[in-house]
Length: 139
Image 1: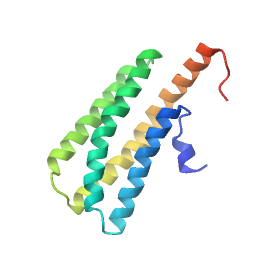
Image 2: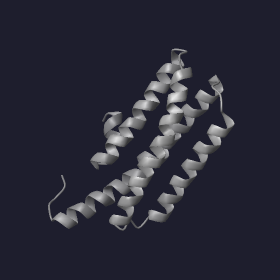
Image 3: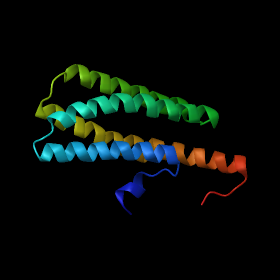
């Protein structure tokens, strides 16, 4: 199973947005390895600020639409990630190699904990709710 398949939830918009995050992670790691990470770091911070607002808002709308039973704990995780990003931005106003290393570590942890765990559960719930609503089996 490829890495892409591992993080797929089956929910098209969610998978698309997760892929964007995975692509950013890959670009940041490559830029760091190539010692060309200064511009990529600035882009990554801007991207993540936009991403968390849009992605989390959309997930939370779907949690409400489909009465997700773990909504409150999932939203709490979102708030934690927003705070972590805000704190990171305040701590690292300027580029440093240590900041890039820390950002790579944080994104990796987010992917492992949130996408592979919490978001996959949300994705299953959305798919099951859509299946029940339409009466059509989801493969």
